Length: 141
Image (cartoon, rainbow, N blue to C red; front, side, top):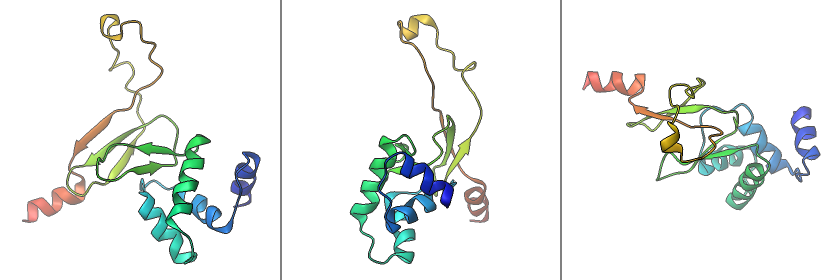
């Protein structure tokens, strides 16, 4: 926890107990939570935390480059504290999101006529399908 405190103080983030709880919840979190998921988790420990605090903290973390918004679900924004380049698999049934750490740059190389002079600096691929749990429940029904 001291490492997190030092990291974010060094970036100029005002650290209240509620903000620390949000940062701690996000640290290493791979479930790609929504703002409401974060709010509910932090509210269990800090009942007076507001949804505004969660949104303000999310915005600050995004501005610092410490959190990315995933726009893979039009109904709910999800957030990913892993800002390293990676891709995602999304279950079309339960909406679970899994990380994929593979480099597809060589496979996805765009021909120069498609790029039209655009300098490619990265890519993000989303894969859609059914997770193992949803496949199992589908085969039971």
